[in-house]
Length: 602
Image (cartoon, rainbow, N blue to C red; front, side, top):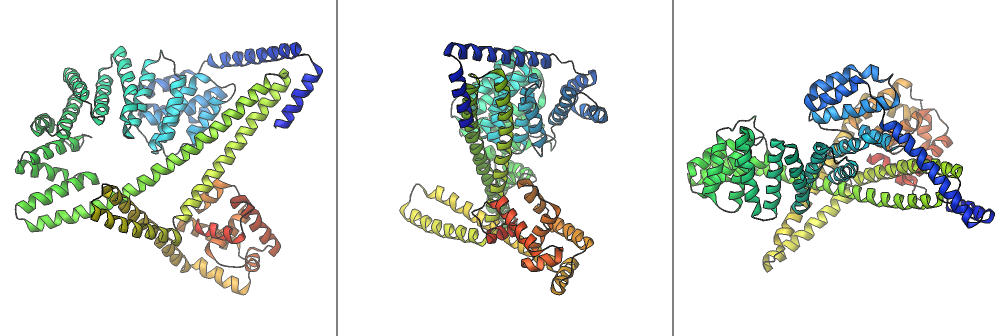
């Protein structure tokens, strides 16, 4: 690309003087800017159908009704104009988010973002597309990507739209607070608070004050008390009992953390009157009261509160309750209940360790993917900058040609990046289901055990950190062993199926598999390995014949000659097909053995 552009630039410089080149560049850029501005103005003044405007309004006031309204428009949306149909798709995403329906896939929202990023689209909708893509990543617990798109929306948002600007700041602050980045979260919550004061939205003002107080509390800053009390005063005036009780609980939690148990119980106790299972915060109310009573030596009250917490659906709360209940029952000499609580404590601890390992793996995976995303986006931005500089010195017709080329190139590179990321993820998952991975985990566990022994003897300050590393390594090792065991059990089950026996018999007699046999085989692998097909096709689409060949490689150890007999294809065709897929999935430097191992590991 650089060579072609260089030749074009050298040709122009040889044919025209410097002044002529400058004049030509300025004229070309002016025409391009005018054209882009004209298209943007046309798009931004597009009038949308009344039924879509009504649906947008319903998303804010009555999301379930908006979903029903949009479903009724589904057929009609197919005959709408391009701008209207894309607006319809954006509204479908908006309605689900407003109805608190968690996203399960970012593909649809990413497609909408891609459209509004494209040339000629209605740019006024891009900020909302970024926001809902951020919400989708948030629902999937991919916090770095969620923050990325929330901040992109913040760059575009109209500062007169105070409601949307406040929501964006609040969401960014909330995610940063969830990541224990309280200092970074504070400016966003404060901006949201200032905007809500201008809008006079009391509920959002209280929520913003509460979050500011949380952030200050995490920073161990006494300013949190001022914001808590201000939120408490406003919530009392608003006569919103649920919100008032939530602030009471927050104040109780604060006093609990600073060791002022009388004050903690004083604030928690009024909120307990409203405790029901329908209240999302009931566990926090009861926990503050239970912990306060425990430290104030009010054992009977503490026992009653911990028995309430023991009925929670939250495993962490159950663990805390079981720990304290075992102590209380032991003090009372009730051995059977003490043992029962200790047993439940052990079960909860196992679940918590497993969940911690899974969340840690997901967190690092999200961080790694985000790092790749930022790195590659940075390279693209530099490349685009070079293209823009190059385009400024050529005629308008050449500018249009290069712009079209850049758009194609970016799409192609994006697809290639996505394929590489998916393939890398599959390889990592395969590695985690291998005996080598288990062996490495066991070696690490052994090493950590030795370090723990040395740290205990030396009373090292790193003892707690080493213990956490050891527990995480044990959890990861256990998960890997479970995956291997599951894989072996599935294969053992498959060996006993009718289709396995049929294929084994036909392999011995060198018969061709019928279409019914192949369809039954496809059904069986979909049942036993539901992600096998998607793992192959998300990296690269393949033909039906190649997919069936991959199934046989996955489930059997036949050579090329037997596979050619079963599939009714020439042996050379089978060999070439395997080589083709090997290069496509693993690269030319890999071997056939690597390819077979890769397929069997999916």
